[in-house]
Amino acid sequence: MTTQEYAPLDDHVVAHPAAFAEPPTSPTTDTPGSERRTTAGPRRGRMPPELMLALVDAAALAAAIRLTGSFNVPATAYALGALVVVRQRRRRICQRVSDQVGRILTAAATPLIVVLPWLPAVRAWHLVLCSAALVIAVRVLSNGFLRAVHRRGGLTETTLVVGAGETGVLVAELLIQHSEFGLRPVGFLDSCPPPQELPLPVLGPTSELPGMIRRFGARRVIVCFAVDRDRDLVPVLRESQRLGVDICLVPRLQEIGSSVPLTYLDDLLGVPLIPLRRQVPGRLGRWSKRAIDALASAILLCVLSPLLLVLWLVVRLQSGRPALFRQVRVTGEERSAEIIKLRTLAEHGNPDTRWTVPTEESTRLGRWLRSSHADELPQLMNVLRGEMSLVGPRPERPYFAERFRREIPWYEDRTRMPAGMTGWAQVNGLQGDTSIRDRVRLDNQYIESWSPWLDAVILARTITATVAAVRGRNR
Image (cartoon, rainbow, N blue to C red; front, side):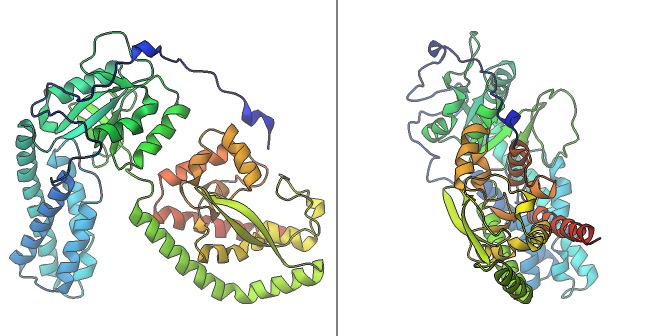
């Protein structure tokens, strides 16, 4: 751990308190259908547009099954699978169906494997093509219907704009002038708003975004270019994600074309928008990750139990002390657990506050256990009990976790996901006495990009790196 990691960052501009307008108790805009609201949270008693579109897609898939005469359990499973794939992302602001054709075709073809064993190939492909065609046709009609409803002020979503600069004003004006998007902007958030007249009031600094989301019941947030530093804005956006709002970022140099597929990119009359995940990971993702952890750790414990028993006996006989070393680690957000490792040192000194362990203090067996990471195999019990995950940010001792939380930007954000036996930072060489800032950056990147496939990649790289390390040490 090096001291240059803790160099202070320069201060940012702080706006004068008079720059902020007092938030109106009942925000109003000039958009058609705007209404006065004081409640916190979305209006009740109406169907969200996402649910309505999901029902429309389900009706289209059911019609495809009826037209092809495929009334059976596999066809129903196919329809459910296609519906999950086609509805796996947020509702777009830009409702061009042409941008969605590729995803709809993929969604229709993905569950094909379910019906192939039960239906003739010709009928199965007929079902796929019929489903895709009907979903596309229904999307065209439903999007046209939604635009008409939006123009009359119906099914609108309260929207906040972060950044009151030139781009923020452009976005707000486009939303006010084009009610067919269905977004009703109520104000800006900016820590240093410009002095010129704005089309909407400045509700407060960006740090108040989560509170404003709750106050106005906002469903959408569009982030333009505020004056805040990333280290100040990122935690605010991550807290806002937990509220279930849809957040889009306007990329810098948006006039230049990007290689982001149109399926993932949104659009506001020429202003590209990059959507963020609503929650990282979502509830379904957490459940699936936990299920995989429980199943895999149980299997690995059964397979590796002979090896663990041998290592336990050897360590016990060589050290003359308990073979298992227990230590409290921070394993998640406001969570800690006593993790289990095989003992690799005869005397640990003060293990809770000591950062590095000199190589000469380890026995020969201890050095082999550390290099092969076999000393961490007992942590499979922690994974089985739900205290850790197979893949995730490495757990840290409370003493150092508290220190890093004060000194390293976004360190605490890495606890959004349970700690793991291995992680993205570790497979990229960041283990032992390496940069904490780099570890934090990669840990948070892993959380933001999490998927079951990424976990599989990390586990595969961990196994190959461990095998290579053991072979190199044995030569």
